[in-house]
Image (cartoon, rainbow, N blue to C red; front, side):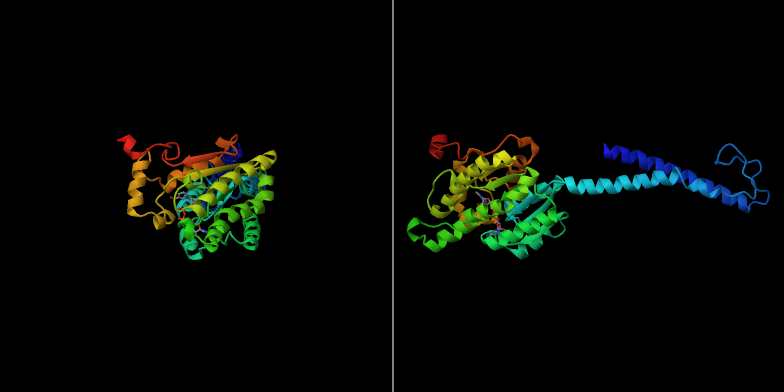
Length: 333
Ligand SMILES: NC(=O)c1ccc[n+]([C@@H]2O[C@H](COP(=O)([O-])OP(=O)(O)OC[C@H]3O[C@@H](n4cnc5c(N)ncnc54)[C@H](O)[C@@H]3O)[C@@H](O)[C@H]2O)c1
């Protein structure tokens, strides 16, 4: 609506400007002509412009100047209005992989995005050339850093509509050799980080009636070998999602979870051997790994108004892996 008014005002102002400049040119030509403008029809109206007559000064004032001023005011107000209403998001672990793909999707939707990662170099590379981003180098497993990140992100964005808790570490190992240090290393990012970021940003999300999307994993839905810490952290994220959805619903905050199956990212490739890649291929009904963009699309949906009545849910974006409890490759051949 505002846009239509603006277009009309600009068109009016434009045609007035053209009209005025035609008249100024005409008047100048008349000034220079030996016989004045006798016989010519001046665009001032249907009257003749005398040889020594110049354009009246007040011709350039109301209502022409007023129209131009009005167009300018509407345009400034529209920019401010756009800034105040433009949707925003904070994504943790946004320097690469699923987090980066989600940031790009949000940017394409016109959101302003705070991209948080503890890897400053990778984050600088990722954000180079991306407009409307706020790169924030913080470690989300550290409560003091999370408090500072939340303050800086909120100040830079003005409002927070979505928080995507995506950062995680994958550190796999057998139960018997998983010491407390490895357990804590996984838990402090994958679980504590989700809790800390959600707590710190709840006031801003209350103000915007925003949403949280937590990224868990198929490993949080189905137990497997080597994932005592990772799988348990992701199962906890799924339950944390439901706890938050239950309590924050009354503020209009929606909280959902995406559980990716295998996606070809740096995290996955660090722990998936060629054998594992082949086995996944056989065990997944869609017979392939997911892409970062496919995960971003599900996260984007949960953050959108299309999901306005969805909260407390876990969506497995996994090519059907989770749904096939006895989908043994030999039973499918
Ligand atoms: N890739 C997969 O196959 C897969 C499968 C299931 C679940 N997931 C989940 O999806 C999410 C994204 O995975 P990805 O494959 O894109 O990962 P990735 O390793 O490619 O990216 C993770 C990013 O998080 C950052 N990060 C890690 N710990 C951090 C911390 N404490 N503070 C700030 N930043 C930190 C890293 O620097 C990195 O840039 C993770 O939650 C992961 O567990 C991935």
